[in-house]
Image 1 (cartoon, one colour):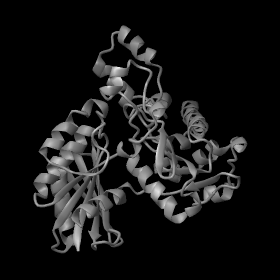
Image 2: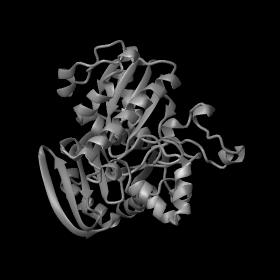
Image 3: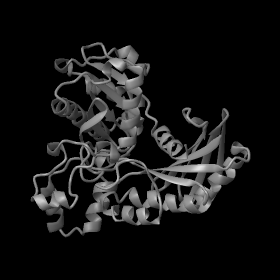
Length: 384
């Protein structure tokens, strides 16, 4: 059996999973973990065989972090080589949608997309280069968060700018595609009656977006040209009048200062002045925390309606992502008052985190996403 490693690299963390590929069967996950605090004080976490290992790494960059992962996985692999490494790549632009075997030429093309995803693309590429060095014999496969949305109708893919900008790639890309891919596949298998249904999926977390699908095909997404549009997020502002950017420029802010603010100082953190973490805000008695949560909920509710229109109706609403899966309060508040859309929920089932929580004409579900499994499947396909 071949071993597959999946990597999801951020600016200060690397999430990883290890799968065994039996050749034709679904890859089997045998270990999962992450490296937190990449930089001056990194920590490695490994969960395997019911045990949890925590190891301090001290100062570590992405390359040192991957070397530490290799060391800790050696006994897990039992002498088995890593045959393939799968990477989550946030932005594929107009050229990349399907998973692709990575080489230097492709990495250079992906690097050109950094301005479209400055918080993610450089770290995705850094992890790929580190993995190429750590696992030189392995097949390196890139899986794109934008790929799932590449078939949008033109009206959901464009902005009302001069036409030449669309041709240059200024368009709505959408993100969290690996999550939406997993959720739609899960629904197709577990709920065959919804296979061709009109479904709104709310991937709510530190990065949040929503998408409507029909027959596993993305119709529209709340995220657009960059990963800062749509819903408010942990530190990103979400939808914003472009005139605000012009105003900030007139006030003397530089391009870098504006970028840092929109990506790192806005969202739940900026509105509350307390934290980017929804758990902290839900536990807080501060009125600013409550107002930040109120705005978040209001934006999600608005997008439920907008995406239902884009989808031509609504058969199911799915919550996923860190907030969507775990914050019953947010699910309850989002669904409150949406009876006119056929959305109502069982309060007890919602609080218990059951998979099916709806009581109305529209099915409402809570489904745990698994982006890593989507990546592992893509690698297994290349290895077959």
